[in-house]
Image (cartoon, rainbow over the protein chains, first blue to last red):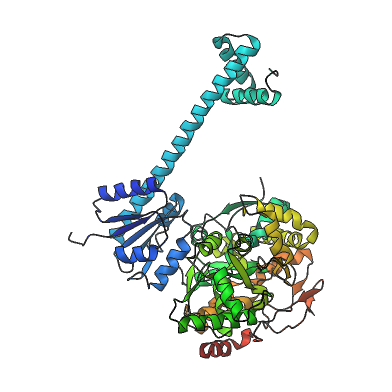
Length: 199
Length: 407
C-alpha cells in the first residue's frame, strides 16, 4: 500500500469531541489531521489545508455555507462531494444518527475513506455515550444531595435520628412506588414553599 | 395512540408557523396525526434527515426539493411538495454604512425596490470607481427564494449580482450578528431576522420580497416521495391539519397568541413584539417609523398554500439563469413534477374549501385582486406583480429563460 497520506480536516466547535476524533484518526494511522473550532475565515483555512476529507458535526449551523463553498469551489481547489456513496444507505444512516457528516474530494476511492467515516461515527457515538453517562452521574450526585437535605429537614422538624429519617423516606418511597430522590425532592420543595416554619 | 405518526423537521424561521401551529394548537391531533417536530440547525441537515428517513416531511425552502430532484445537492432523495407554507415574509437589510451611502444617492425609507435598487447601483458604481472592495451580501442557501429574489432585484436595477457584488451563505439566526460584525454588508432573509438588525440599530430594511414580487412563493412542506407514496392517508391527514392551521394563523384574532407561541425558546426565541411585524406587515425599516406592507406575509390568504407548478417553474428558470443547472426539457419536467397540486386537491376536497381551477398560472399578470374560478367556495388571487413589470408565463418557459440570459 503506497497511497499518499490523506489530509483530513475536522470542523467541530466542540473541542473535546474534536480531540477525541483526532486521537482516533491518529490511532488509525492518519497523521495529517487539522482541527478547526471556529468557522470565521474558514474559506482561507480550507484553501491552506487543501483537505482530501472534511469531517463536520451536524449541529454546526454552517453546513449550508460550507456546501455552497464546495460547490462554487473558488476557495477550495478541488471540488468536494458528499463522502458516502449514495447507494451506501446503512453508512449514511449511521452517520446521520451519530450526528456527523463528511465530504471528500471527487475521485478519491471509497474504500480509502470508509474507514475514516466509520471511525468518526464510532467516536461521535462514544462521545454521546460519555456525555450521557456524565449527565447521569451528575443527576445521581444531585439526588444524593437532595436526600441529605430531606433527611436534615425530617431530623429537625420531627426530632428523628439520621437513621430514622432515612428509614421514613425509604418507606414512603416504597409505599408510593417512587424513587427515593423524588420523595426527597417533593419534601424539599414543600419545605421551600412553606418557608422556615412550615415543616 | 394516534392513527398516523409523522416526524417533521423545521428551521427557526417565522414561516415555520403553520407547521408549528398544526401541532401546538391540536389541528394535527384532530386529524389523527401525532406530529413530532424537531428544530434543525441547517437546511443540509433537513435534507439529509429526509433522505435517511428520520424525517418524513419538513419545512423547506421552495427551490430545495427541486434542486434535490435535479441532483444538484449532495445526498438527496426524491422529494415532493404537496403544500406551500405561505407567500412572502422576506426582506433585504443593509448595514447602516451602506444605507447612508444609498441615501446619498436618493434612497428613502419607503421600501420601494426600484428606488432602493437605483440608489444601490449608484453606490456600487461609486465604490467601483474608487477601487473599493465589492459589497458582500448574504443569503441563506444557494437554492433559496432569498438568493433568487435578491439577484432578480439587483439585476432588474442594473446591478450584476455575479460580478458587482459577492454573495455568501450565512444561516438565518446569524445574519444580524454577521452584519453587526461587518462580515457582510447586507442580506436577504425571512423574518424575524431583518427586524433583529433594526431593533439593534445595526441595519436598515431597504425593501421586501412582497414588493419585489407580490404573493411570491417561499417555504413549502417537502415530503420524501417514497414515504408519501406509502402513506397516502397520513399525508392527506397532515395536509388537512396544515390547512386548518394556516387558516388559524391568518385570523387577526389569533395573532397575539401566534406571536407568543413562536417567541418561545423552542421555536424562535425572539420577542413576541418582533414577530408581530411579520404578522401585521407593519415593519419598521429603521427610521423609527412604521411602514405598512400589503401582503407582507400570507400564511393562508390568496391560495397561499396551493403548490403552484408555475412557482416551481419560476424557481427553475432562476436556477438556469444563475448557472446552477442546464435548461433541458427533461430538467424542466423534473421541476414541474416536484410540486404536487394533485395531492393538495385530493386531501382538501372532502373539506369543501376553495380550490384553484388550474395547476399553474401566469405569474405577475394580476394588477389587482381577482376572484378566480374554483371548485366550491370563492377564491381570490393577486395582485401578484413583479416590481419591474415582467410576467412569467409557464407555457412560455423557453422564451423567459432566453430573455433573462440576454439581460
